[in-house]
Image 1 (spheres, rainbow, N blue to C red):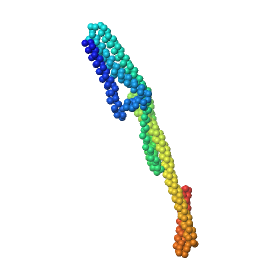
Image 2: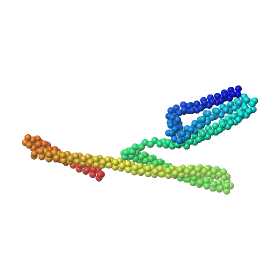
Image 3: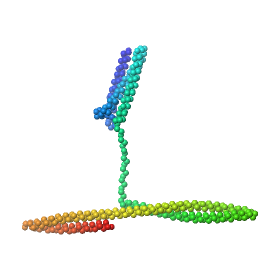
Image 4: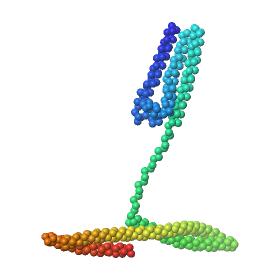
Length: 384
């Protein structure tokens, strides 16, 4: 019975270990390394399909460490667990025999110790692999994303600049016109408030005099022993009139002060608008001058181009004349040395060559006149 259980335990341990080892060395390759290259992680230290020597010493070291870690986790650890289970079963089955129980206890103790050592060793190996990958994998440089270049602004022509300057000038003149109107209105308002203040001060003076007269009348009636009620009523009315006059005067002072402030602001705005008109006028004049200079330059360039063209035509005419003179000399020589049967043909060739020379001289003369005319035109444009 004891041998049976022991044999069954060993067979189970061997079978389990074989299955684990088979899956350890086949499944990762079948599952992980048959993945397409485009789906594999870019920071993988090596590929199993490649030769280890292509990866250098670092790749071989990492491969050995991975095999050790896999062996510890998938082989040694299951064996330790199986031994722990077998020892536990032995304690249960052979509980009556003290020597068997003691041996089972030792097996349990050493199985637990081995399992702890396996876990610790696996952890150390994984840490080493992690640090190796971290040290061996270069840090990716940050990718700088360039902002799209702003489209280049089209350079404005002098005519367009002149039109913009003229539009800015007109706008500034409109603003100046509005500022002048505002200034005129504020000046009128100041004059009106000044008149209102003068009227209020006049009313205030009259109310003060009436109050003084009423007070004197009240004092006189009281001194004469007469009834001062009428005088007191007049004094009261005069006091109310004086209070109203003071309030009106204060309002007139405030209104005039505000009108003066508005007048100062209007004068500042008018000066600013006038300055803007002056600046835009200068800018418009400069733009107009630029247009004129550009047109003059274009005209001068055209005149220079015409001079170059006529000079080239003159050179061409001179070359044609030289060629005609060479043909004339050749025809003259042939005429002098012609035989009787060839004399008429040589004479005709000579006459034709003579006509060509005369025409070439006329063309050259016309070309010279055209050159002189284009040069004169260029001088006039430059002087203007």
